Image (cartoon, rainbow, N blue to C red; front, side, top):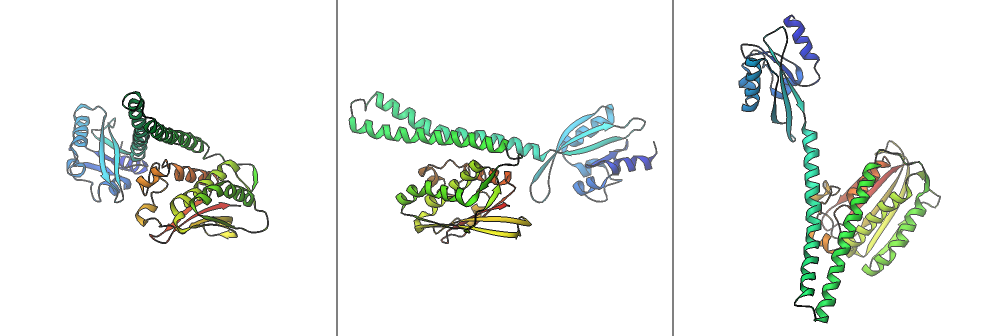
Length: 343
């Protein structure tokens, strides 16, 4: 096989790849390898380019034994740490070794997300379970005949059990919406009626919090394709959050606006804005609000019965409807949650 053909073949590989000769110098490297490892690397000793001991040892072993090897190469693309699985394989008919870098960053991130998810669920369940076990032990012992303490402890136990029940319910809901995210809804619905029904359901909660709910929507019906149960869940979550966390302003407004060409959707769309007059959200939290178990105010969220999964559920439902979720807020200026749905 000619050197020109080897170079052309390496250039055609759609991932970073380089050829190391028996002299331990890089014979050829494709564009992707040069982007990862640096320009003008051909002709240089591979150890001065790869540098990471595990990768160097793997390539050296392949050069000596003519056997394939595998290693891990760590890098950074300027925005995040990256991880590559490196495979070195001898090229038949030559004394060279082909070294290929496969980006496995997304796989490691997915694995980390799963580990974080399990850790977060365990933490969220451990706290109420510990409280329940402690109160049960107390009721079985020192507080057995203390009526006042028993009633107080039983109420706390009921609150903690309800908290676990909400968490399990949200976990099941999150699993369901994630599994359906790529399935387009097919049923027609009338959006204004759905939002009005949601507000009517939440009005007792608003009255207890001293919050006035208002709806400003077009008079004509807004018919669209969507999952009515899931969209009701979206608006229930957002309005309930506005009441609980932004209700100190005493007002939560819902605006529904139609557009024949929305800039975000590049076509006909409807925008639903939920606006509160509360304390607002610090800008550093906005980008992470839809992450599982992320809370801008962990203590207050738990006090109000939040599970940290509500906005993650909202995000997945909006994605299923091919929509967008926008959050705008400044400290002391309230918050605006905007759901943009195609029509």
